Image 1: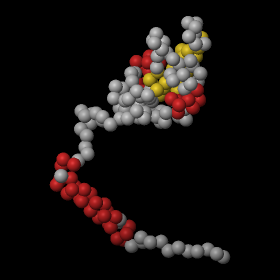
Image 2: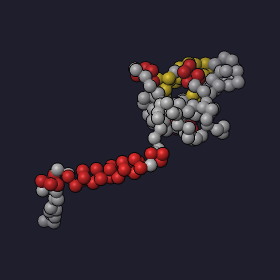
Image 3: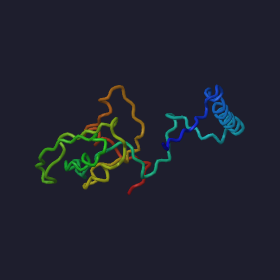
Image 4: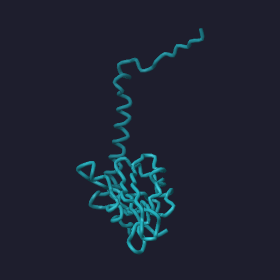
Length: 168
């Protein structure tokens, strides 16, 4: 009938205990242990959070921020391009009319749920006004509730560009 029967390996008691695999893993761990004990100065361990990483480059994507005009108003024109480009659908924008003559509209509400965000940077690429960026250098967030990870317009505009990252 064209059926090929393949004999399974690993039916012995020794194979079912995975002893050779466990011994191989322990051997590798022990080799690294001995190597690190001999040369402690070569360890690449950082005492986080006391010591913060200093190797962030200009392409690093940290927490979002909204940029401002020179007068302090937001650059965002509520075009919804960032929310449309976001694969995680974690950006919520509610637009309102703008009467100051700078732009037609602005965001009444602008929220980003950082627990849903995948930090892909598509929102930054999609923004025609360079209103949203991910260059704050903030890479570690903590909070006790889910609401603490939803950044609103006020929090996003308060985020500043990291001094460690180079200008474009």
